[in-house]
Length: 148
Ligand code: RB5
Image: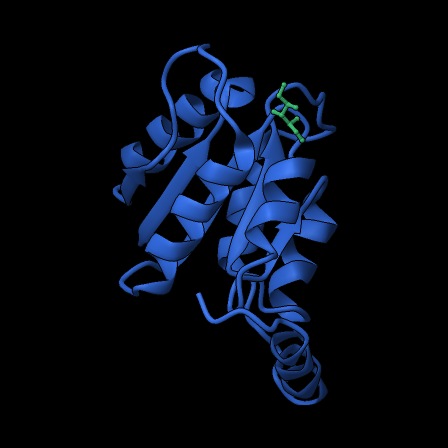
């Protein structure tokens, strides 16, 4: 798969671990995040990730900040981005099955109950169920007024 990843200074180690794991599995990972602890602003990182993703060519995106909260809020400001801040295997699978999420968000300062890579696998292995969820996802898009 072709995966985009981006992070602020609060999730450098997490981003690197995710990127390494996915690349070892044979995926192509484009890193739009930072690799130092120098402070940056997560809205800028999310905007770069979202606008790049929306140009096409990526299967999904992963965004990370300290808590996963700010960068997911910022990503979801972009029409066409459905960013899910997941925290276990259930939410990781459900965000694809029901919400057709195209971004996952994680926090570098969070202690998760399962490894982050396992949540990513649960997301990758799940399929969007369509049907009534198609209508709801379409309504999500309609709620977003900006075009980038
Ligand atoms: C940065 O210190 C921190 O606020 C950011 O990474 C994120 O957690 C915000 O939601």
